[in-house]
Amino acid sequence: MKVVILAGGFGTRISEESQYKPKPMIEIGEKPILWHIMKEYSFYGFNEFIICAGYKQHIIKEWFADYFLHNSDITFDFTTGTNEMAVHNQHCEPWKVTVVDTGLNTMTGGRIKRVQKYIGNETFMMTYGDGVCDVNIADLVKFHKEHGKIATLTAVTLEQAKGVLDIAEDSTVKSFREKSALDGAPINAGYMVLEPEIFNYISGDDTVFEREPLEAVAAQGELMSYMHKGYWQCMDTQREKELLERLWSKGVAPWKKWTD
Image (cartoon, rainbow, N blue to C red; front, side, top):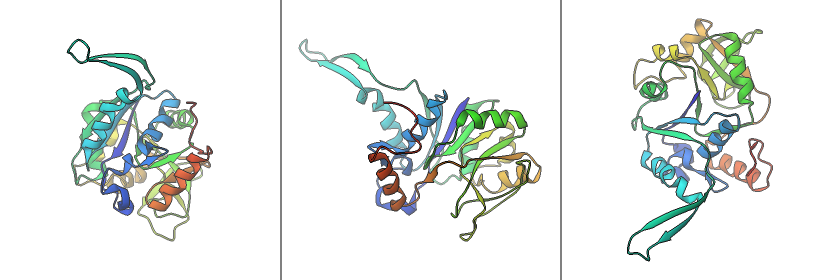
């Protein structure tokens, strides 16, 4: 199952660093937060990624282009007058990564629509490139397969300004509405599982995925919530970035499940 990661926004609320790089490339422990997200999916055996890039997309492409080189022991031999390179050991994950330039000003729904040809007619996962959590991806996928609806999103209860969900007792999302700063209801944390029918709800580049598409599938009873009571944290501000950095540097990052 492929994993789509939205990584094309401007990241204006963390402009201290995003003026130089896409927000998903801002580092936590000397690795982009994008890498942290991918490592979690990889822990559960999901190793094929489609990165929806946009703003400064070349930085994401160049980082992956150099990733193998930077994670290998290499001999460069110039003695014969040529540039011979021998790889002795490499420590890369078994990832297949497709980085797609989905446009500079494209909305979230439009970015997802633009990578449809790379997904095909199959179930896929999608999340945002600026939030980490310790959700059990295997249980999330199992939950989605069991209910048979078009879409599942991971919900967390936090007093933050995110899309607000009205969830019934059977986990059906009865409605999806835009945020209010005072809301304390369950919010959309990303980490979604989607059926290919979701593309029918996206009209084009101007479609905000969290509005018309999710509102429509919720109204039809086709949007389910996977309630996550563990850790989740987005990185919208420099303060949140510093929080994640402290957890990582102290060796207590809740989202880290893999071993080095």
